[in-house]
Image (cartoon, rainbow, N blue to C red; front, top):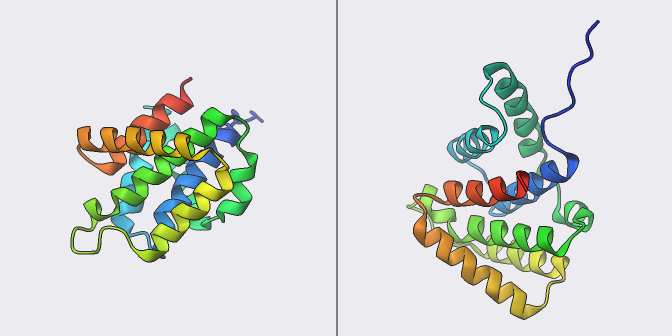
Length: 160
């Protein structure tokens, strides 16, 4: 019997994905369209092989459905760089939430509360938070969609 290869992403990378998903879930819902777009974009970061894509799609789908609390995921981030990336991606997800659902309010009270909780859990100095938010706004302004902007940030993290 052949032993299958290890997962194509590390536990740390999957944890970042889980935190981003938590922010996407913060308004209490994640539409099938949002979920599919996120998964398609994230899977494309790791492989072009059809069989590998299917396996990775299932892994992401399983994690996406878990909606793991930030309090469990954030403490596992090891570096300031990882914390800043998670802040940036979380901010982008919250800020751009209305781009996939233009008929809804841009940012809900639940999303604001989730983002504030993320900021608190990350424990970054306020000046760093502001700098990261500014950089995220710049990237959102230059990207076609929030998912593509988030995907770009994840690509940088996953391939460093």
